[in-house]
Amino acid sequence: MTQTEWENEMCIKILDLIENELYIDFRYLDVAISTLILTPKESLRSTATDGISLFFPPEQILRAFRSNPLFLNRAVLHSVFHCIFRHLWIRGNRDSDLWNLSCDIAVEWIIDSFDKKSVKRALSGIRTNIYNDFEKQNIPVTAANIYHYLLSDVTENPDRLNQLTMEFFTDDHRFWPKEEEMQSPLVTEAKQNWDKTARSVTLEKNRRGDDPKEGEEVLNAQI
Image (cartoon, rainbow, N blue to C red; front, side, top):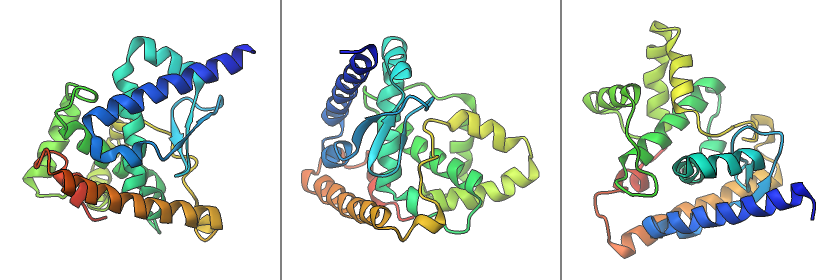
């Protein structure tokens, strides 16, 4: 076995362990968490998804697992939520940078709302302030609504986009399909699969009836 093969194998074991840990805290997300195919990608500096695979950079996974395993838990869940909410396929004519940021904020806001050991972390001042502002303005937890909020916020504060992008960046969106790729069979199939998965998540959450408040916004959000 080569060094690369060993690293890839170890990373897959680590990510399998992370998925199992997330499953304990989020049993209704079982199908969703296990849907993405774990795929090494050395050229990346962070995890990424195309709706089919969860791409990961082996060196960073090994390093983060030693120093900050909580980050990896959140990173995996982050990509899963992008897929559940179909963020990859609904950008339309929106500005790509602002849309990417809106999706990241929506997902991180959701994850930050969970009081679960596997993902819970202290909030930064930037996150606390923007979440409070959303709540004051009654902005629902969806990428589309956050996008409209940011349109005026970023226009009035040019440095705001960079500040928020750095704060909320978790995964690479380079594999999200471009508009001209939306009708391709692979992209269509991936979206349809996640449509089904999202419905099954909602049904499973309702069937279990546990944690009635936690996650309610996640599952009921309409993009």
